[in-house]
Image (cartoon, rainbow, N blue to C red; front, side, top):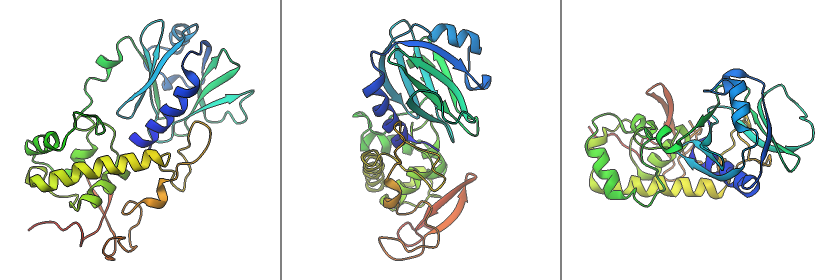
Length: 275
């Protein structure tokens, strides 16, 4: 579930504590959490490395190492990183643990086992297939308009496509389309220049607001910040997860449909689908 705001929040939490720390050991409790190399090689390559930088590319956490390369982490649906001291209180879902030189451990928990840790010699090359960063300076309204003009498919699946735009998932796509007043089934290349500008503003505003709130923790509490705090953006959601409730803008009932096999929330009055 973690999307750009959740990953960015985790990155900021890690950056404050990890940079300059040496990795003194690594344990892989679930072999398929690391790809590639195999767990033994993964442990050997990480042990003795020092963290130089912590960043993000799309939904990937990028931990650059002083020795060489970087550790790339994708949380997927239920992955969670925690910096903890002492013994692990509950290791049922502990998949990978990195011991640090200050006595703490960076622990990767993942109940559903979909998350992945990957060592890459060249992180930029490894993630080169990702699309534009929606909060980057070069992602302008004009750039989005140009990108949309070349696409004939529905706007909702397109925004979820990480090769098109990196970082958006189901929550923030629904919220961005609601803010922009664009129906999720709208054909991408039919958006007018004004609609493209509204969508651009909506995407950036939603992501920034969610980051400021530490991300979105849903009722399952799967997402938590590095220090265990919950994300607080859920109370600001206008469309996602609010099927049957009144639209905060016009009062019409929020509807839920499936688009590209994903549950999709929208307001039929604020986001009309042109005939």
